[in-house]
Length: 287
Image (cartoon, rainbow, N blue to C red; front, side, top):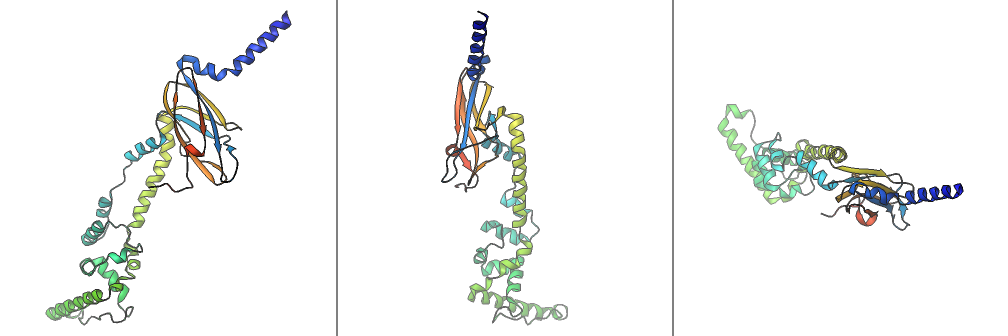
């Protein structure tokens, strides 16, 4: 009789362990999510995502990142251009042509004789690129700096004649703007613009996981050697299973997840993470 009671207790213990997910989900009207995570490299079989942290969030991680970006607002192009230490004429030109990078391969095609003659930085770049024998047939100045004080009328007349000759040369030799981009490298604001965005992206990447866990975390788990995990005690509602921007790698794949799912009271939701519901960070995102 004693032996039978011991056997009965063992069977009951085994049954309670086997149905543990369901019983945990039912406690207090909460639910659970049973997770399976696998990655399929190109030309290979699916592989389990082992010992990888997964997080249940009450808000999409993508929306959390947008929230952080909204709090760390980058300046507009226009306000950034206004902050640069260049002449008002160059600022006006950059805004009119929506140009930040003065050394881009196609920027020289935008320079017109009117732009060059009326924008000090562009004129200086044009002169450096063409004068001193660099361009055959380029006009040589006849005015002398010494005449500026001793004979200002002659100085101004000869200077105006020279500027007119330079303009006519540019109009008849459109290719003479080649080389200007190189001469503008020293004042190119693209470097500062890129650094501004790089620092912004770094701040967002650092704040994202912290914000998600401090404000929106409902549960977390680490996958086992079979790529499985169970998260219990979730109130009924909609959640997102996220890797918080951290990628799981296998072969040529590096996947991140931000997958919505629904929890019902007393139920265990089943969620399969795979290539199909992930973003591969090695592949360019379509605009």
